Picture (cartoon, rainbow, N blue to C red):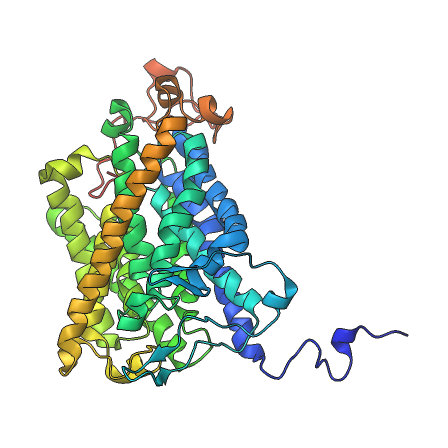
Length: 486
């Protein structure tokens, strides 16, 4: 009987000498976990945290973005992010589809780090698994970034404009941040720390989302005044997928199943739990009620804050970062937002600016403060990297973090604005007034639930009859939880 080539000679054809099966398995699992954060994680979260009439549209924006990014990524965007250097902040575009490319050992060609005299300080990143694993792992990061951005424009962005926005923003914004900080660009070579995307993913999505929200314009007045979640329990389900999926998000970024990935996963959970508790306590202290939506926001800010330093800081630092990520974004969302006219003017539907931009920048700066020297040697290309609290070169690290964050902010404001203006010349960014009034049925011809109402409490005079389960409902006042969707 004929034996396939892959299984001849002790499977050597399919298991080259450089392949580490454990690393490859963990990288593919990590990629799957991050993918699950988007589909179905954010699809469920977006579809349930918004007003009922926008459930289908919000969920579909996430699903569409994921699919569109996958195709754009393998045709041109991967190599712009992790390929050969074109500019100090950009790689050369090209496809990642051929087997000769995908089956060879993974390598990020621009990541070799040199001393000032030209000698090699840190060798090129070359994990012990095929390029196919690297391409997919980085793809799901790109996809979730665009989906996070969508949270700022839910409930009014024209779906056709969104279809055009996704590939343009991926191409001209995300790839620049990814190459600059991860792919061997100028910020990578300078030693700016971003372990798993505090700047590349969260700061960029928060700033770009806020900028897009400015150009798209606000939701309808009625929606801004009242926007209750249509299913809080499903919101928790989506949030749970996000939290558990973050093990792959931060644990996969050493590109290997090593000791650094272990501490990254532990720190991720420490910070997220601390942040959730702090946010909840603040809600109770100042509003006398623990908000479930608020707890989800606190969980997210904790996950975001630890991301740039997950494998670079010690456990005690993760707790401090959790305390700050549960309080600083809470303060900007609950206090500053209500007093700053610019934040009032821009309708950031899910508060992505606070949960991702503020938390991401905060995490990046705290990483520059708390990065532990020994842990830095396990991950960073620049020797003797350390956080400010460890003295030596640590002081300059905080400046590097500020510059890195500033670059991401500036690039996203400018490029996102250009993209929105260009699209608006061809396709209206905002839905028509009729679509804004009706919601999913007008936009998609579909609705999430075959039920009356749009989130209001049951009123027999208005709705008539009884619920289908024949249960009388007497309470007619609106929900008054402390932290509500903005």
